[in-house]
Amino acid sequence: MKVDVYEKVWMGIAAVLIVVFLGAIIIAAGAQAIHPPSHQETINPEEVYDSEEFGSTGVEIQEDGSARVTMVTEMFFFDPDEVVVPVGKPVTFRITSPDVIHGILVAGTNANAMVIPGYVTEFTITFPKAGEYLMMCHEYCGTLHHEMQGLVIVEEEDA
Ligand code: CUA
Image 1 (cartoon, protein in one colour):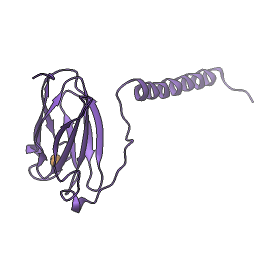
Image 2 (spheres, rainbow, N blue to C red; image 1 turned 60 degrees about the horizontal axis):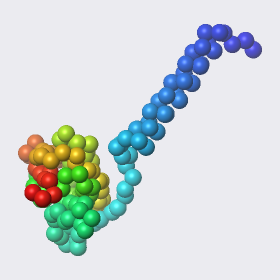
Image 3 (tube, rainbow, N blue to C red; image 1 turned 120 degrees about the horizontal axis):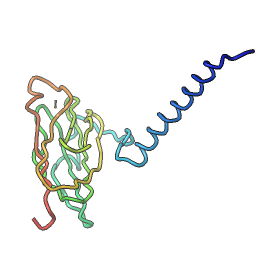
């Protein structure tokens, strides 16, 4: 069987491309802050506010200075809609929804996740710069979806 020289060249180029693309995915996943879905935890959406964790939402500062944000997304607001977290420390968001699918996007950061009823969304982000970051819902959730927004206030520790 004779393989045309051009065919060989194109096969070679295709093989190199596959290696480059796979390499890009592996490098992005491993070395950069790209988080493929990795966390799965379920919760009864009808019992969100009765649950021990989501019965009281808000920010909790841990002993090591990191923060934990317990949040509920609902038509059409974030509860709480304003969170104050420390700069330069890991901030773990734990969010669930009692009604429909919402999303959370913190503008100017890579915090970007869906919030699905029945599941707990968890991600951790470290804000490198103090300031005010708009957070918004990025999954269409109803007529007032566009008004569903809040604020993440990142403060210096001694502020
Ligand atoms: Cu919540 Cu869109």
